Length: 599
Image (cartoon, rainbow, N blue to C red):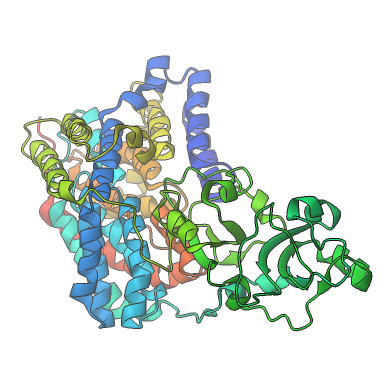
């Protein structure tokens, strides 16, 4: 009965992860609480994930990655792409994937993508090569690069910890390098030679107003002669209350070539032209009798919403944005950055209605309007990634060598066995803070706490599955062996890889690793073999996330920005998944032979 309870819990979690109706970290918290409330695990076991060395190491890697970003190390690598790739599409693709792969080997994968994402649009402009054909290789390259080191991606650490929890030697820092390089090389060659041709080049309108369909819900009006609004400020006019309108832009009658974003104190004059958003039907009812008239010659294009002191820009919600989960209204976007949000695009579709009330998600793209200074402030903020201009926050460039040395020291200390990787990581964090490569107040913001809670709260499920509790891992291992065991260890390893890569398309790769790694260890033990090749295949499978845009945050981030459709990912990623599966089945047994258990 216990086995079916655990299987039911796993199935429920998988469904919720796939539907995305509930945040993944909340789903994981619910899993942990159910295990605690049913007495399946003890209190200490239920919360042990928060003290697990793997979780501590992931926290440390987030902060160390931030140090490389804030000191400009990552920016230097970004600029190297332009020098290496030039204007040749094949070389550009390889350069993008190679650069982000190197970065992802030693820093947070999604952080590497976020740093390079604005650069892709600059490269696209200079090389006259579509940005969409660079963004997917960027995301895929970051996932593949994470497979080359122990700290490259959380699943690697979690698989290593599963080995240690079962009494086996965990993976060392560069144990992933031989298999990771083989997989990485396969991915780069495929995308450079084949995959880039499968990425659709959808011609988007150059006009931002057309791209976001602003003409569907914005109207240009004029303050007519004799209007009661003439001589009143916007605050006094009460347009939002009386007509349900928000004034986005004003072109004065005396200087129609100038446009500006109005303040509540802006005084309206006869002949002023206004761009308004809101209840247009209410305005239509009043027709010529109302305080405003439709501007007969209005043509909606970017020029209608821009001027000497007003710009438009696309801003993607960043991975660590403080606005995630908040609406535009709740985040007080206008008050915080002095810009107006004109439209919101999510996963390639412009949201209609009251989009300012919709909670923001990773990868959402806002069309914002403001002064050049205000747009620059948005570009430099940690909340957004401006995709049509390359402007970064001020970097501590003088400390770049120091940050790089600290990261290298932490990696080497862990690689040589001098310190456990969690201790080496935290020592690196301390040195980053002491040398101010990372400001102490920024450290907690730079950690993706959703990922931490997801990993920590899913770990009790792995504990519940071991032989000291329900024994579900061994029970599932026996069934896997009954189905595939007669075909040899390679077939068993293949089945574990395929199961892992399929579930990671709809759930966090870290959660997939926590779930499958203990089963892989149990399967190996049941066969009387060392578990390392099986667990290595599971780690690779957990990062083979190319079939859907929701399987990993890196894919989510580029989904809306690149104007992709859901079907674009399986179109490009299916063959890549197949190739990586073949390479894994060939390379892993060579590097990690199927060895009998040592007595």
